[in-house]
Amino acid sequence: MTKQNSEYYFATADEAEAAFYSAFEMGDKDLMEALLADDNVSCIHPSSTPLVGKDDVLASWDQILPTMAESVIKIDVLNRTNINGIAVHLVSEVFAESHDIDSEFSQALSTNVYILQKNGWRLMMHHASFVSDEEYTDEELLEEAEELMDYEMSQTVH
Image 1 (spheres, rainbow, N blue to C red):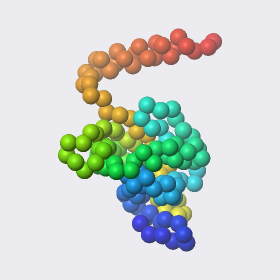
Image 2 (cartoon, rainbow, N blue to C red):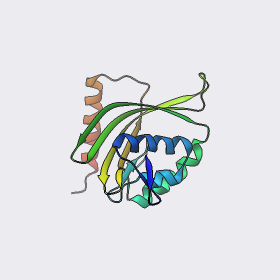
Image 3 (tube, one colour):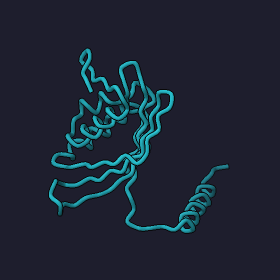
């Protein structure tokens, strides 16, 4: 990551991702803002509604980043795909209150989508979900999906 003309330049999607998690962990609003793509920015935080547009996404980070002081984030990239200037990363995230081995922690899975722009790689979409403590069988997941579809169909206005 280098700074060119007062802007950050991320030469690869991996550099942009490293900067994203650094901004997240350090609570760095300026770096988070510099990371976002020019257009088509969206975000879904765990247990939240979709946010569309750079202003709404930045407003959400303005609320989250101050709470990250002293936190530690460990990531593991589970899968990377990079085609025609779009990179998609599936990431396991572990959030701990401190470096203490006994500190409380939570886990999330995220999909991060990066786009190559004139000013380098930028984050276009972040979608995170908490990892459930419960294990589900395929049959249980299918049953829950069917119940949800039935409910949604019953709410459709004709």
